[in-house]
Amino acid sequence: MSHRREAGNRRRLRTKVGMAAVAGLGSALLLAGPASAQAEQYDRTAATGAEAMNMVVLDNIFIFICAVLVFLMQAGFGLVEAGLTRAKNAANIMMKNLMDVSIGVLMFAFIGWGIAYPGDFNGWIGSAGLWVPGFFSSYLVDVGPEALADDGFYPLAIPVDFFFQAAFAATAATIVSGAVAGRTKFIGYLLYSVVLTGLIYPIVVSWQWGGGFLSSRATGFVDFAGSGLVHMTGGFAALMGAIIIGPRIGKFTADGKPKAMPGHSVPLAITGVFILFIGWFGFNPGSQLQADMAVPVIAVITAFAAAAGAMGAMATSWITMKKPDVSMAGNGLLAGLVAICSGVGEVSAFGALLTGVVAGSIVVLSVLAIERAGIDDPVGAFSVHGVCGAWGLIATGLLATTSPINGAEESAGLFYGGGASLLVTQLIGVVAIAAFVSVAAGALFAGLKAAGLLRVSAEEEIAGLDVSEHGAPGYGPDMLVASSV
Image (cartoon, rainbow, N blue to C red; front, side, top):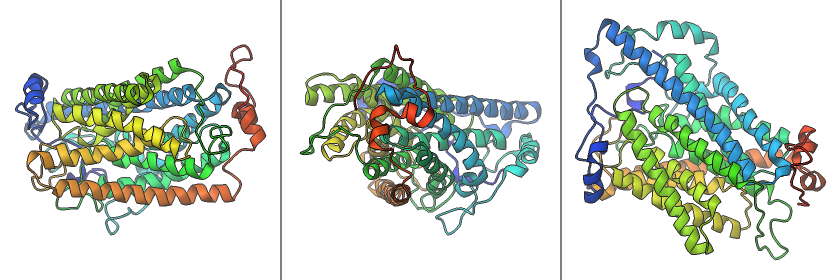
């Protein structure tokens, strides 16, 4: 079995899923309590022979398809970022997303994987090492029914496992792209992507999914699909990048008041939001790591949080900005998706709706607050992923109806009689991720700035990065929107 398949570190629901099944959604919504209906799981330990092998194949094909959906999210990120920024930088943004995938896969393979999933090294960081040379030999011995894990779950083949995990690493990296859009040197962004996917993200992942200090706490840290490990990592790296690189030319007046710099295509941005929504049904259900009847329940809970997030953001923008802002509503849907990643295996339908609607409201207020603070984040990357990722971890500590997934002692959330123990653990995770990523990414961006590798010249920024960085515009002359800033 692959070295990361320790029984205590899986992102799987237990034999009974402690959330509302579709048939019980109405009562769960009305009572706002622990789910009365549970999705029963088939006893996999009873399977033998051809049946066991078929289950192995089904699990691996399912996770492979989910990984494809997660990779598709890169297209969604690219469209959201391009649509919400100027047309003169569209090619540059798409190129950065393309390189995040390319660099992310390779760096995570050669360095990141060994750091994220090695076992322990004092509970904080794994022992890095190349595993690629043994890739295919491991595949040959890891797919048979004899590889049944001790806790009764069939394992994933290493290529499938890696494919899925590398998609997550690329997702964490690409979150930063929109926050530094329109003024970043391409070479500097490439170096950032190398360090994020090869070092920073894998270290954070090792703390929980790799068996580190968060997973070993008595009241286990819960982050089913990465509100903290994936989204907070990308979000706080985005914040540090935006702060250190500084705002776009023309974003703020001489006295520091923000000026509107609308993107060039709302239809592109919202199309990207829909693509991300679809991709998230690989992100969250795929994190079950097997094909079972928990998958559709996870999908419904995910959809509830997303829909509530969009509604919450629309209402909040309507109140605060006097109009229901389209881009804010789109970010609200994404905020709900980010927030539910942590507790999707632990909350009821009501918990999902509450998590989502609060995330949608928070993201609008955060975007406005960040702008007033003089930080230029063109797409709201920190607000969506950093702030709402943290809220997702906290929401799990408040709204979890079942015990943590990693097998720790029973500890529901604060609102469901479990006391503050799980909430405290979740808050420790929030602080640890925010502090480490802020320091590591801050040092990285500061180093790039000191080396003259971070920001383009004023002339290049005003002209647009498509031509100066890549030699050709993203749009033809007849489509390019003229812009002086």
